[in-house]
Length: 142
Image (cartoon, rainbow, N blue to C red; front, top):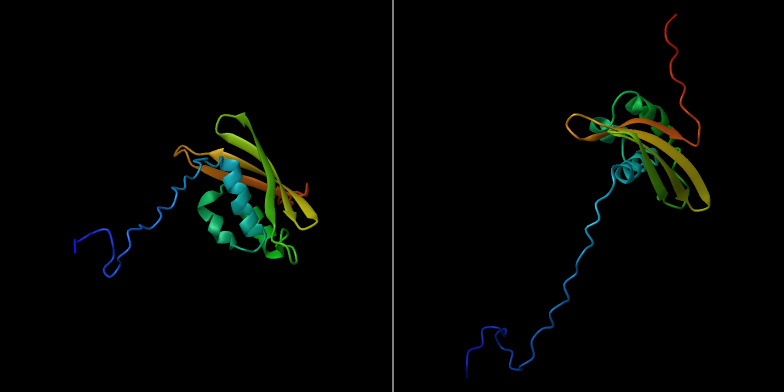
């Protein structure tokens, strides 16, 4: 009996296991506004805590999220909210202004946000609004 190193011990037939086809994933890099839309949705739907965005926000954005998140405005009963579409525009170098529609079952909400690129080339959220309702900004002291 010959020794065949490709066959497990005790196996006498000549068949070999089928080789699964190679799966290739498309290498599609997410645009910054697509990535941020998903992260903002996770916070505003209650799936992630606000502090998850600490290193990804600048200026008033973190305060805006901290104000909105406890109300979980994008949480829906029964259906998990998803980003239906997200569009971004670049009004200036290092700035992206984006809008996204968030769907949960029959409910659709709008979300707008602004991203700014720092000197370290990282994008950070600088502002966020939901459904056209901007959070009131504290009036400057008189």
